[in-house]
Length: 309
Image (cartoon, rainbow, N blue to C red):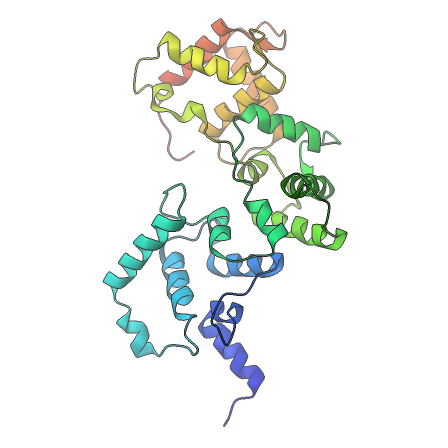
């Protein structure tokens, strides 16, 4: 019995998800909308952990390559893509697109590979990472306009609007598109699916160049020197007034918290602040001095590494 054209399309999509996004004649990838990009991401990130990795990555690479053919390859041809060829293909692919070299593809790295609507791509091409978590906390304070401890959908939309304006120097994104982009960004970065971004989720959308405190010297692997402490102090004392306070203090504590907790929100940060500062006999003046910072870093260096946290 002959299949209807509709069933054929569904079968082809089931056989190779990427084929629907290629031009039938040229086999070039078409420009993806925000929603289409999210569909691709969700299809291959099957466990929803924020990465395409392992067997997911193998499946994506096989389909990505074979989707360039006009028709689906047969099981015999699929088998001819040997393990050795897959290893070589993966190696070349990861060298080109795995920017942070962690052996996985994250959402930003996939955005470099797939052609997308220009405005939506700009949201992922925000590739001047923030200098430090101090800048991150300033942005957080600005867009968490109701001080709820979360970036809600309307606040995220304001953030994305400003980001696109800054990137393009013009305001040519329709309100409908902005809503679509906001919805897509929430689908991507809202890991606990509560319809808003907590601190740790926003931190993935807006990465910092480096959490300086992740360096081995702060994990007891080497002796902490005066120079190390001075480097950290100057990293967080952005206004050079001799103390770490306000967003500087929050940025420092956010980086500390990231070492022990993967998912965290504003309340976790407040509780962590109380615990840390109580531990160094903090004098509650809203600031950290060099001496207090030294005590915190020395205590940190004595902590055993905990890879599970």
